[in-house]
Image (cartoon, rainbow, N blue to C red; front, top):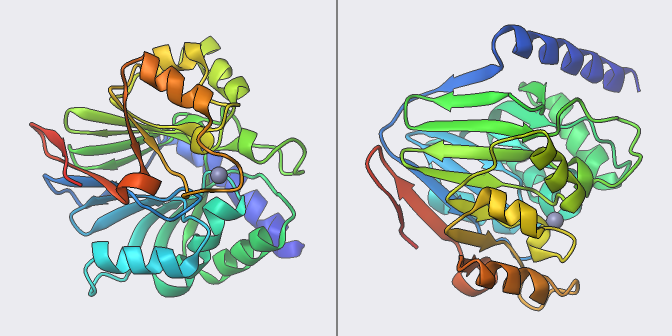
Length: 286
Ligand SMILES: [Zn+2]
């Protein structure tokens, strides 16, 4: 309990300092090429953004083994460091795989909300964070991670530090991020629902993006009409497990995407979906 208090105090302190510093968290090593990979981790989310030897990993799916195998193929064997780890929210299909990352890699910066789901998996995650010699910062709107001129990651939601009491739903506290690399932008939405989508629209947040990571694995409670027209993507990624028990993605979400003439790429059908971007172009490579 004492440790937890210390963590929250330091989160508050870092939140204040991040405002003073103009909310730019970290400058990573700059490389002219960025790769954005939506990993096929079954039912769950995991997105790896690599720039040179620097990595930002957003969520980790539900299996340590699956995630470590994927990372082993995408990160050179000599690179045992992951620069930034972002947990959108502490549900098992997003956090469980990250436990293996904390055990196997050195992590420099961990970005989280203060949401406490009071679950065993979150307790295990927090215990590993205490052992990791990483900076832990609060995910709030305006926070930016910059890697040279080719890669910027900006947090669009939540607006304030999330209540730590665990009231409400974990999904509704999800971190939303916009990744800008060269000419292309990617909107990562965790498992937010229509309520959070509308809150961002009402606040005038610029949601426009070329590629939308569809929220909550294509659930019918997300990806409202207004939100979709605010983002106006040309491609949509659905990170989902084959024949999952939730019935994701919902047919309404698929038809909304179809009506918008948006190309849909699903990890259960395509496997990993990867883009390679430089200053001039950003292409789907697998
Ligand atoms: Zn999920």
